[in-house]
Length: 132
Image (tube, rainbow, N blue to C red):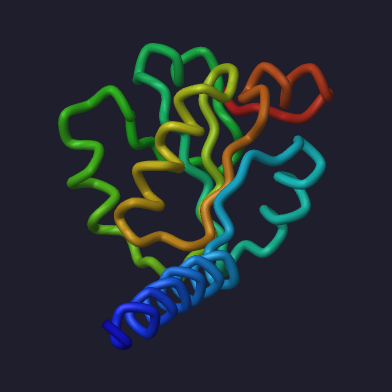
């Protein structure tokens, strides 16, 4: 019976430590246009990924963006080929799909993934450049 409080304390500390460690090493969150632009300046460590469909991308995309369509059945396979030590900046049209892609990447072990809040719509509204 005396072992029970010890086990409870052990598991409580284990859970707290795991949560704390993950919080300290994982940065995955939605960010503003200005934050996105600032992080993107670190070209050697940063990869911009457009998670929209090919048809959407034809209308314009962010300069230097790599295309990995989240609606493709190959999305998880494609992200598995990416190095986990990079910083990933994701965007879509309005931010919903890129947030979902960010969650998928986090579940796959990526620790520095950001989603552009408002997507390319917010980027264009801020007067930022797009490529055709």
